[in-house]
Length: 212
Ligand code: SAM
Image 1 (cartoon, protein in one colour):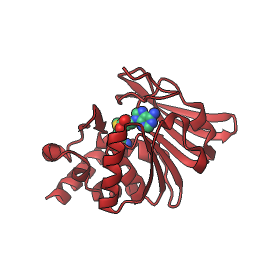
Image 2 (spheres, rainbow, N blue to C red):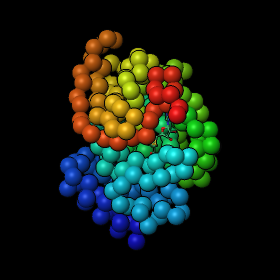
Image 3 (cartoon, rainbow, N blue to C red):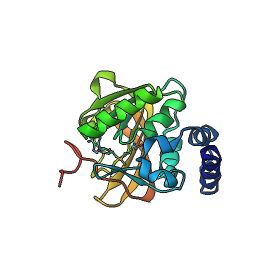
Image 4 (cartoon, rainbow, N blue to C red):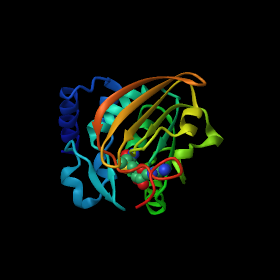
């Protein structure tokens, strides 16, 4: 049943413009129902964000697919994710063959998701902390994906990218943001593409928003 629902979701995302076959295969394979609370299972394959507790969400599948497509992950790439949340985005990146480094600022959510990674046998280097300062120990990264909305583009994340690497990050107000895709051309030059109107929970921390 859930395999059929995943295929329906894949077709839905294709119609909405997602065309990277590897990304579609990942969405068609990873069991989203494993990353959400049991009470939400009937909504697992709807193209909507869902609450995961602690006032946080698992992003809408379209958003996950769009951001992953823009990140252009290749097998073996070292990818930093800021905002582990449910672990679903990290699982998609791992499926694509990336070495995933993921940071979560909510301690309880971090513990819960690390346990889930272990249970599902998904290899993610996870850390509790503020992802706006990146993860210097493992930098530079081929790609960085930020899954919460930021007021600005954190400087450390730009620094921790390889030349040619991509940073995908929602930037804007607390409620709505535009998605920025930066490609690092040289140490201080970036090519920027902007995609309008996304809605993420706020990125907290040193270069993010203050906790309310
Ligand atoms: N990638 C997640 C998924 O697949 O479920 C999306 C989770 S949610 C949209 C964003 C997450 O970012 C939340 O879990 C939140 O606690 C976390 N977050 C917010 N600010 C952060 C920061 N500075 N560093 C790390 N995580 C942060």
